[in-house]
Length: 141
Image 1 (tube, rainbow, N blue to C red):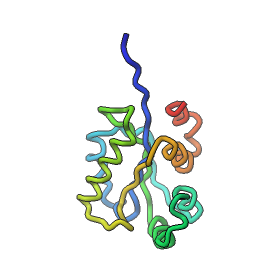
Image 2 (spheres, rainbow, N blue to C red):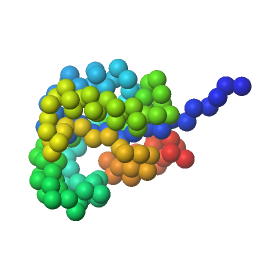
Image 3 (tube, one colour):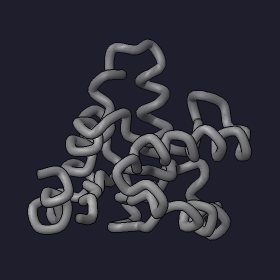
Image 4 (tube, rainbow, N blue to C red):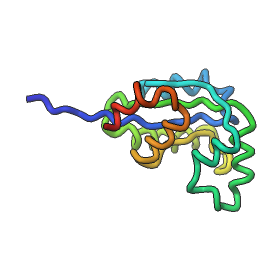
């Protein structure tokens, strides 16, 4: 009997400072991930606060909020090609490499990856509210 692998997608962002580099970033992502959903969007202050509630009390949050609102963001739901059950960890590993390659400082690190499944659920509801029930919820049930 074949083992059933549960697919757990991850919420991923390419932040404003690297948005213009999407043509070179997306092929790298596609080497290891299938893009389930993707879109360009802009974050308002409310969206930044909802997306990063764990950081609101940090001294650097006002500057970070401004950075997140300064331009378009590319939001994606990703599934690892080789380990779909471990997409969150696989994306977090790729983010480390991408941040190193693009050499951005912590405050403008260019990429976001969900911490865990609960974060991915919360974040995907924020960036894909219309798509949540029909397309994303089944992954997490």
